Image 1 (cartoon, rainbow, N blue to C red):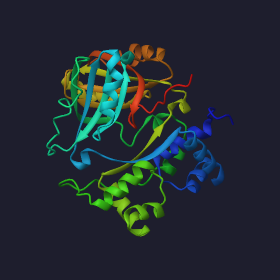
Image 2: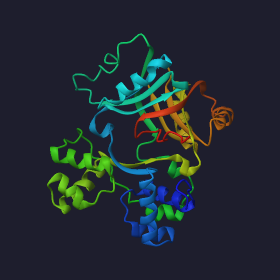
Image 3: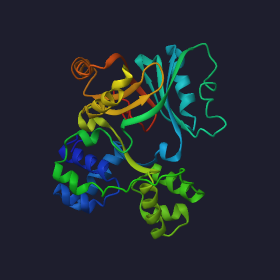
Image 4: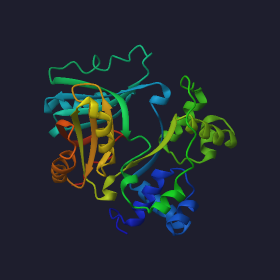
Length: 330
């Protein structure tokens, strides 16, 4: 198989990992009807080509953190420098250049008790090339997190999805966010690098026994702090264009419109926000031309949408996030 050629088995494997990121290859193989060695070989190939990464991530809301989506308008000559500056911040989770290189979209998270929680905008590079900033606090996520476009791909049948999906976790207990110890943070750091890291490797990172690691993983997932996601080159699914949408919706219809948007097969992320617009989404399509069809059909069919802004993604500066598209090869 050529290095940049992907087939149905690759797409099935990505879908399977999105459903159950740490499932043994033997379980995935049994559901897909291939050998364990075939699954291991395909996974190694995709990872080696940097087409997928399994990531163990923390859920901001479960830790009591607040998420913001920030839009920074710049002159084209300064956008790259400002984007790199934002990417170096520990509290930014993704940073992309969009709108022909004149706008930066970034996502940041912080605990409201942190002294510098509100200082993101104040710490932007002081340059006249930054001509505008808008900040949108995330109020509710309709689609994203442990879900991605892979679960909408149809690569697996309903029976295969059922066989692979983990048993539903219990509802997280009510109360204050859990307190993470230093060993927990070492565990989460290791999973952020490789969500399929072996128990022995995680035991070395934490100083715990393998059984303690297994138990703590289950506890962190059960309380909602830990979830697993994939960083994917969406060209595996014949997708090569990412576009941010910023929509204004009548407040009485926000919940229904957000849910409808989240159900669209092209939508990889959707959330309700504060700010001049109140609904944000990330669209992944085969090409930029497909955005026109999406706007004139699916968005046109949502009667509560009063205004739409679009911002095509040009380059990912920092990820993972809702834009896991590497730079196109020339």
